[in-house]
Every structure is written in structure tokens, then in C-alpha cells.
Length: 362
Image (cartoon, rainbow, N blue to C red; front, top):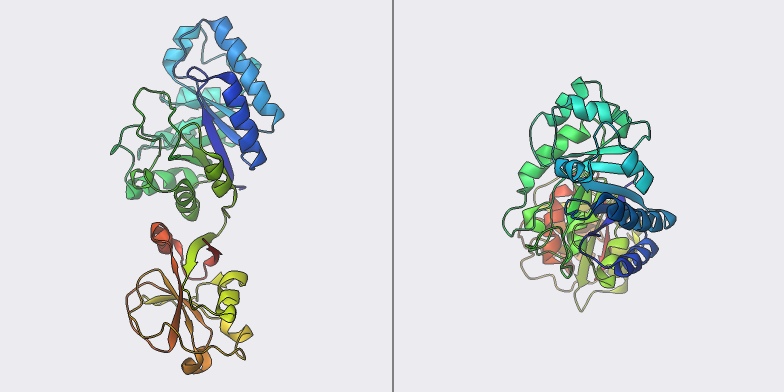
């Protein structure tokens, strides 16, 4: 399932020209889906239709998939029925995210809507909600899952709970989504906005680290920036992510040599299958570089978690083997060549036996 990046906009709080400029910029960086909130609608049906039709059609021309976030109150406000989704189809939306669930049978019924609109379900509860919907023989290809975001500091999901919620949806093969938090975006659906992440531990991390972490779980297909508007630097950083394998941002030590830089930056690394607790071993690289000299340097200190070390000339057949340190240890046969940036140490938990990984110089 192809992984994607997305942005969020809030037409009931924003200027349409600013939204258009933001969507155009994000599209240039490869973003391809939009979370568009309709939770705050206060105008009449005709005014809502005019506003949302314009911005949705603008987004569709840029190649976006557009999902509208709705709640039961919207249907009352606009005097429309869940049994007739023609209003949202006429706006141009590709799907509806149900912020609040029903009895299972209702979700199953609307998944068979004649417009083939996607019905996106709330993922942020570890209950049998999805199972219940599927027992009513829902139109499974039309179902997505999407987590909540949490504007109040301290209220987003714990990571372990987040992962439990994901299992219910991925076990059924559904497309899943979660939110990351721009560190500069100020706009969300409510008057409280301490950021809009799904996972609490992400709230103050760089947005690209949040996204790498979500993709590394192999349980999230779409990563969406929850708040508007992310900076150009943040959009660019997200666009550089490889969503299919972990790429660590690193800083080299001053005395790293050209051979070590080549080993780190140009090789496709993977963790040896018979793993150890002390280090992640990338062993195949030593075969290619077995005849390259590598004199000792930065080899006498205690290596720490997240350090990148390479075997020096004193290491015999293990010369030029790359290792990522997981547990502190000392070994003068290894050179310290760089460090994974501290924020990305959380990604080390997702380097399993045979996992592929790369490095990017920060």
C-alpha cells in the first residue's frame, strides 16, 4: 500500500487565498491528501456549499484526495441525512471521516453509498468498533482508518496504546492515517491549540522525526500534518523522508575519513539476522571495503547509544564493518565515526533482524 503525506486546512477559520497558496506549495513537495475540517460550520447550507466546493475543486486540480471531517451535528446544521451523501459528493469530496461513530450497521450501510465515497473511521479507541462494522458486512474497500489529534498538551495517545489501536485496523488490511504536529502551525479546529499530534511523545519533536517514527511502525500509511500552516522548511523536510525504510539523520565526528563516509552514506545497510543486544551490525559492507585501509581514530572512549562505529585496521576480518551502538561499551578496534541525532534514537527500536536502513548527513 503506497504511503502518503497530507496536510490539514480549516476553511471556517482561514482565508481561502492562504489555503490555496499552502495547498499549492505542499503539492509541489509531493503531498497528496487533505484532511479538511467541517466540525465548525456555522453558516447556512448554501454558503457552506459555495466555500467548500471552491477549495475542494482547487485541491482536486492539484491531485489531492480530500477527506472531510464531519460530526452528527453537521447533518443537523445543514438539514441533510447520512442516508443521502449527495451533498458531500457535489462538493467534490472523496470521502468523509466520521469523528463520532454510530451503531456499526449505519457505518456499514453508508459504506455502500452510490458515489463510492470513502468512509474513514476513528482509530483512536482500542475497542471492537471496526469488528462490529464488519460484522454488518460493510463495503470494506471503501473503509479507511484515521486517528484523532489532540490540541491540549498532555492529552494525546501514549505510544503503546496507539500501537494497540493500529493492530485492529491493519489486521483487516485497511489504509490508516495519523497526525503529526508542525512546530510553527497555529491553526486548528478549536480555540486551544498546543499542537495537533496523535501521539503525545511527538508533540515537541521536529515534524520529520514524528513522521519517520509513524512510518517506522509499519502500521500507518498516511501521515498528515494536523495544524496549519507548516513552514516551507517543514514541508521540505517531510518530502525528503523515505517512508519505506528508516533513514537516520547523523552528524559525523571531525576526524571521520573518506572511506568511513563512503561506507556510511552510500551503502544499503541492513541488520544482521542473528542479532545482538549490544549493537546493530551491518556486516556485508566489510566485504566491499576489506582492502581499504582504516587507521584507528576516536577509538579509546566509551561508545554510547546512537553512536556509529566502524571497525579499524586492528579488527582483522571485521575491519570496516559498520555498527550502531545500542548499549554502552568500549572497544579500541572500532572507530567512532558519527552519532545519530538524539531525537531519532526512538527509531532504533524499529530496526529488527534484516531491517533495511540508511543514513543522511544532518
